[in-house]
Length: 164
Image 1 (cartoon, rainbow, N blue to C red):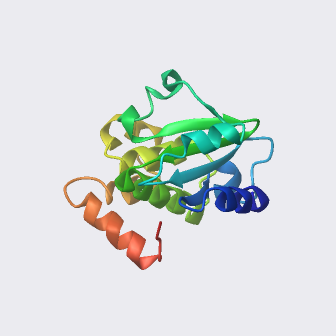
Image 2 (cartoon, rainbow, N blue to C red):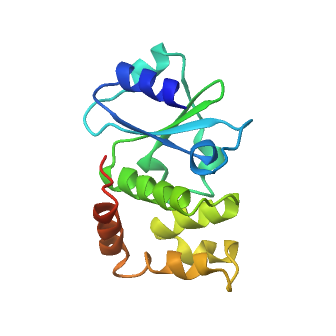
Protein backbone atom coordinates (compact mmCIF):
# COMPACT_ATOMS: atom_id res chain seq x y z
CA UNK A 1 0.00 0.00 0.00
CA UNK A 2 2.68 2.50 1.03
CA UNK A 3 4.52 2.72 -2.33
CA UNK A 4 1.26 3.37 -4.19
CA UNK A 5 0.18 5.88 -1.54
CA UNK A 6 3.46 7.81 -1.83
CA UNK A 7 3.23 7.80 -5.63
CA UNK A 8 -0.35 9.11 -5.57
CA UNK A 9 0.59 11.82 -3.07
CA UNK A 10 3.49 12.93 -5.29
CA UNK A 11 1.28 13.03 -8.39
CA UNK A 12 -1.66 14.73 -6.63
CA UNK A 13 -0.10 17.18 -4.14
CA UNK A 14 -3.30 19.24 -4.03
CA UNK A 15 -5.26 16.28 -2.62
CA UNK A 16 -5.40 14.52 0.73
CA UNK A 17 -5.04 10.76 0.24
CA UNK A 18 -5.67 8.01 2.79
CA UNK A 19 -5.57 4.22 2.48
CA UNK A 20 -8.92 2.48 3.03
CA UNK A 21 -10.44 -0.93 2.32
CA UNK A 22 -9.89 -4.42 3.68
CA UNK A 23 -6.23 -4.65 2.71
CA UNK A 24 -5.55 -1.64 4.94
CA UNK A 25 -8.13 -2.15 7.68
CA UNK A 26 -7.74 -5.84 8.48
CA UNK A 27 -4.89 -7.33 10.47
CA UNK A 28 -3.48 -9.47 9.07
CA UNK A 29 -4.12 -7.77 5.71
CA UNK A 30 -6.46 -9.38 3.22
CA UNK A 31 -4.28 -10.08 0.20
CA UNK A 32 -5.75 -10.84 -3.19
CA UNK A 33 -8.14 -7.91 -2.86
CA UNK A 34 -8.03 -4.47 -4.42
CA UNK A 35 -5.98 -1.66 -2.94
CA UNK A 36 -8.27 1.23 -2.07
CA UNK A 37 -7.62 4.91 -1.37
CA UNK A 38 -9.82 7.82 -0.33
CA UNK A 39 -8.91 11.04 -2.13
CA UNK A 40 -10.26 14.39 -0.98
CA UNK A 41 -9.64 17.31 -3.31
CA UNK A 42 -11.99 20.18 -2.46
CA UNK A 43 -10.76 22.68 -5.03
CA UNK A 44 -9.05 20.91 -7.85
CA UNK A 45 -10.71 18.72 -10.44
CA UNK A 46 -8.22 15.85 -10.57
CA UNK A 47 -10.11 13.81 -13.16
CA UNK A 48 -7.79 14.83 -16.00
CA UNK A 49 -4.71 13.84 -13.98
CA UNK A 50 -6.26 10.49 -13.06
CA UNK A 51 -7.06 9.80 -16.70
CA UNK A 52 -3.46 10.59 -17.69
CA UNK A 53 -2.31 8.18 -14.97
CA UNK A 54 -4.38 5.42 -16.60
CA UNK A 55 -7.35 5.42 -14.22
CA UNK A 56 -10.86 5.03 -15.58
CA UNK A 57 -13.98 6.42 -14.00
CA UNK A 58 -16.27 3.59 -12.90
CA UNK A 59 -19.96 3.46 -13.64
CA UNK A 60 -22.17 4.40 -10.70
CA UNK A 61 -24.68 1.61 -11.23
CA UNK A 62 -22.69 -0.74 -8.97
CA UNK A 63 -22.84 1.80 -6.13
CA UNK A 64 -26.52 2.82 -6.21
CA UNK A 65 -27.56 0.43 -3.44
CA UNK A 66 -24.73 1.18 -1.04
CA UNK A 67 -24.31 4.93 -1.21
CA UNK A 68 -26.72 7.57 -0.04
CA UNK A 69 -25.92 10.18 -2.67
CA UNK A 70 -23.98 9.35 -5.79
CA UNK A 71 -22.95 12.99 -6.11
CA UNK A 72 -20.66 12.71 -3.07
CA UNK A 73 -17.93 10.68 -4.75
CA UNK A 74 -16.56 9.27 -7.97
CA UNK A 75 -14.95 5.85 -8.21
CA UNK A 76 -11.82 5.46 -10.34
CA UNK A 77 -9.97 2.24 -11.13
CA UNK A 78 -6.67 1.11 -12.63
CA UNK A 79 -5.84 -2.60 -12.43
CA UNK A 80 -6.28 -3.54 -8.76
CA UNK A 81 -6.22 0.04 -7.41
CA UNK A 82 -9.52 1.74 -6.59
CA UNK A 83 -9.85 5.42 -5.80
CA UNK A 84 -12.79 6.96 -4.01
CA UNK A 85 -12.57 10.62 -5.02
CA UNK A 86 -14.65 13.32 -3.38
CA UNK A 87 -14.83 17.10 -3.17
CA UNK A 88 -17.05 16.93 -0.09
CA UNK A 89 -15.26 17.45 3.22
CA UNK A 90 -18.21 15.95 5.10
CA UNK A 91 -18.14 12.79 2.98
CA UNK A 92 -14.34 12.50 3.27
CA UNK A 93 -14.37 12.97 7.06
CA UNK A 94 -17.16 10.43 7.53
CA UNK A 95 -15.42 7.86 5.32
CA UNK A 96 -12.07 8.50 7.03
CA UNK A 97 -13.64 8.16 10.50
CA UNK A 98 -15.42 4.93 9.57
CA UNK A 99 -12.18 3.52 8.18
CA UNK A 100 -10.36 4.41 11.41
CA UNK A 101 -13.04 2.70 13.51
CA UNK A 102 -12.91 -0.41 11.32
CA UNK A 103 -9.12 -0.55 11.60
CA UNK A 104 -9.08 0.14 15.36
CA UNK A 105 -11.60 -2.65 15.93
CA UNK A 106 -9.98 -4.90 13.29
CA UNK A 107 -13.34 -5.60 11.67
CA UNK A 108 -12.62 -8.58 9.44
CA UNK A 109 -16.22 -9.21 8.33
CA UNK A 110 -17.17 -7.08 5.34
CA UNK A 111 -20.76 -6.69 6.53
CA UNK A 112 -19.51 -5.18 9.80
CA UNK A 113 -17.35 -2.68 7.92
CA UNK A 114 -20.32 -1.79 5.72
CA UNK A 115 -22.46 -1.30 8.84
CA UNK A 116 -19.92 1.13 10.32
CA UNK A 117 -19.70 3.15 7.11
CA UNK A 118 -23.45 3.23 6.60
CA UNK A 119 -24.12 3.96 10.27
CA UNK A 120 -21.83 6.98 10.26
CA UNK A 121 -23.33 8.12 6.96
CA UNK A 122 -26.81 8.15 8.50
CA UNK A 123 -28.11 4.91 7.00
CA UNK A 124 -28.02 2.85 10.18
CA UNK A 125 -31.70 1.92 10.21
CA UNK A 126 -31.40 0.27 6.79
CA UNK A 127 -28.17 -1.58 7.65
CA UNK A 128 -28.44 -2.51 11.32
CA UNK A 129 -29.37 -6.06 10.29
CA UNK A 130 -25.70 -6.54 9.28
CA UNK A 131 -24.67 -6.71 12.96
CA UNK A 132 -26.25 -9.21 15.37
CA UNK A 133 -28.19 -7.68 18.28
CA UNK A 134 -25.89 -9.27 20.86
CA UNK A 135 -22.73 -8.01 19.14
CA UNK A 136 -21.10 -5.09 21.06
CA UNK A 137 -20.33 -3.48 17.70
CA UNK A 138 -24.03 -2.75 17.31
CA UNK A 139 -24.23 -0.48 20.36
CA UNK A 140 -20.88 1.07 19.44
CA UNK A 141 -22.18 2.12 16.01
CA UNK A 142 -25.46 3.34 17.48
CA UNK A 143 -23.65 5.94 19.55
CA UNK A 144 -22.60 7.64 16.29
CA UNK A 145 -26.17 7.77 14.93
CA UNK A 146 -29.12 9.94 15.83
CA UNK A 147 -29.20 13.67 16.49
CA UNK A 148 -25.81 13.75 18.27
CA UNK A 149 -24.06 11.45 15.79
CA UNK A 150 -22.22 14.16 13.82
CA UNK A 151 -21.00 15.79 17.04
CA UNK A 152 -19.77 12.47 18.41
CA UNK A 153 -18.01 11.78 15.11
CA UNK A 154 -16.22 15.14 15.39
CA UNK A 155 -15.25 14.31 18.98
CA UNK A 156 -13.94 10.91 17.85
CA UNK A 157 -11.87 12.56 15.12
CA UNK A 158 -10.41 15.06 17.61
CA UNK A 159 -9.65 12.38 20.20
CA UNK A 160 -7.79 10.23 17.65
CA UNK A 161 -6.05 13.12 15.86
CA UNK A 162 -7.78 12.43 12.55
CA UNK A 163 -7.26 15.16 10.02
CA UNK A 164 -7.73 15.23 6.29
